[in-house]
Length: 304
Ligand SMILES: NC(=O)c1ccc[n+]([C@@H]2O[C@H](COP(=O)([O-])OP(=O)(O)OC[C@H]3O[C@@H](n4cnc5c(N)ncnc54)[C@H](OP(=O)(O)O)[C@@H]3O)[C@@H](O)[C@H]2O)c1
Image 1 (spheres, protein in one colour):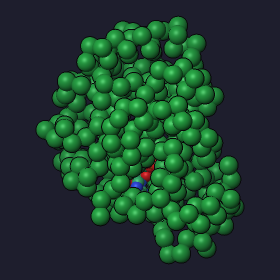
Image 2: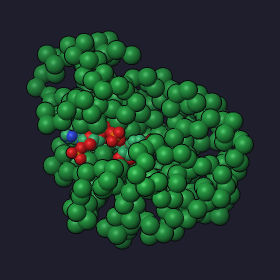
Image 3: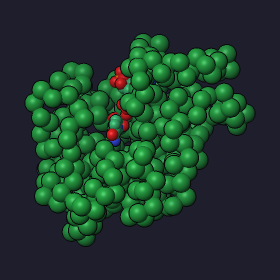
Image 4: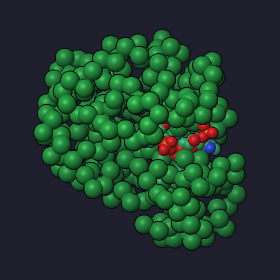
């Protein structure tokens, strides 16, 4: 079996419906410890499984450097997405989210640093991180800066990591080729905006698509997806009473297949530092969207 592909909107790129989110490779102090060789094994397993899109960020500690070191030589096998507006170095000691700077100087410095760390001469996609307002983008000339970087051949496409309340404005601006949006069965707040982004011709990278591993037996529900209060994901799941309707499917398989059932999704960038988890996710993604009746029932029972 192989993982199905979809068009990443007007970029025209074909990407697997399961992508790889490389935040889990950021290392300590903000992420779990991971040895370089283990990160290299995960990254090569991602490509060996046929996944064709990797998402990373200036903000993800050692992630970009590890991608450059361990799969830089396989650069033609994946669509590479990073982010901008981030501080070049995470402020020491401060917890995220860090203040972001969307000025021309910082956006250019981010892209140059990403290219160096990733050992490449082009980013396929650079996404404005942390969903700034349209007013902020205009004041900082961010879009013009990104268009100049595109014209210079350093980035191929421009995207926005967008969330409510600013995402509708971002879609209306008509300048972003791709949107990165949080979404899963227990976090459906952006469901209609994914549809709107796709209808406007953009590609969509969905994050948080397996609710940060919360439904797996070995993960605490408390971790839950980014953007929901602790325990809220578990409450939504339990209220849906879907456990009895899974017909032997694991909750993780259900979550992943629910996410890829959204017709506006191009790819879900699930993060993992664990090869077994990666392979389980690949097996679930290969099965594709949920059966129509299961999907319809789930949408009815899950809170919007
Ligand atoms: N734009 C933004 O602001 C933003 C914010 C957050 C994330 N992102 C991007 O989105 C990607 C994914 O985001 P996310 O971390 O929020 O959500 P996610 O992909 O829903 O969850 C990732 C978490 O789920 C666990 N996991 C994955 N597969 C599993 C499995 N089969 N069984 C058990 N646990 C599993 C991973 O732990 P293990 O390592 O133990 O598998 C990891 O902690 C990130 O890597 C990053 O690229 C973007």
